[in-house]
Image 1 (cartoon, rainbow, N blue to C red):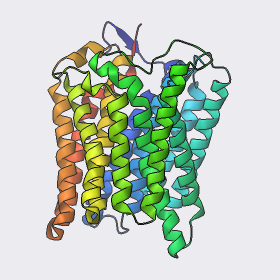
Image 2 (cartoon, helix red, strand yellow; image 1 turned 180 degrees about the horizontal axis):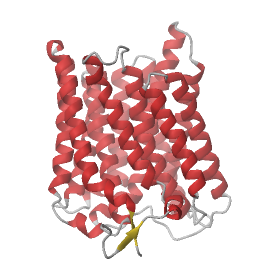
Image 3 (cartoon, rainbow, N blue to C red; image 1 turned 90 degrees about the horizontal axis):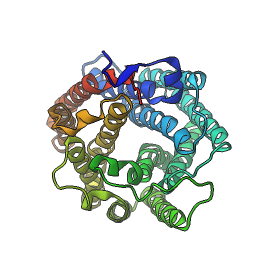
Length: 396
């Protein structure tokens, strides 16, 4: 039931706020992607799900949330027309078709669908940018860099480099560009603009409406771009085999950028559940990189500290703020919201269980399975409290 401050969603609302469809689609992709492991170990899926799982999480889960957020936010930030119902439904159809392709182990087809999805989204954004009446926040240069990364990575996946040593180099680079660059760069770019709201602080990336960038805007954009270039450079360092150096560069870049642009040092020490979740998520995000720099032999396992504890928890936390804010329920986030804390705790417990499986091979299968189940339970709990509100629209 809609509250007094909200009404039921219409098709026009979907055209203006595509997150209402893409957030649930992203959740579905994530659950399917994680479910592949217990299904495989239970004998229901014969093919090893490594590639399909990674694609479903990066392109399906994170891709769904990124496209839903940007499809909603970018036209508003540019003071440009919204995407419209027809475009949103076409994008959603491509996303769901891609998820089905990856889930059924048709990875090549899924890569091609993802490339089309990205291309269409960028074309739609460019068309709206032509009618803009404002500049986006300066950190959004990292969003543009993220799309360059994922385009390049997906093209590498589509054209399938050979199986020789040179081919292995490009495959490794493709995974870094798609699995990390596509998610990490938007988090760093969007964060300074939106995250201060979680702590009721003003954003230094919120500039007055203008078609011409101010000097302060250019300075912050240059800082963001510099951080992004260092992160992308660390990908090339990693594929050359310098794992410690690459992850140390990534860690140092993120730590400095967080210190300069994120509001954690100015935020109240005690905040609501969302603020606590953000602190945990960014600690895990950076912690995963420094852990790999110290123990590179376990880099595949330890990377889940960044991917699940960092990327995923940031994604679900920001999505909670977006959904509650757009449905007239923002005041409800000021309380303890124990359900959010429990949901994130289950996701983190699932992450820890999965990571532990790589340190003790005898328990790998059981811990991969239990870790997946715990994470799914946490996501389902989050979904029960958040996703019903995508059907509500704030009257204001």
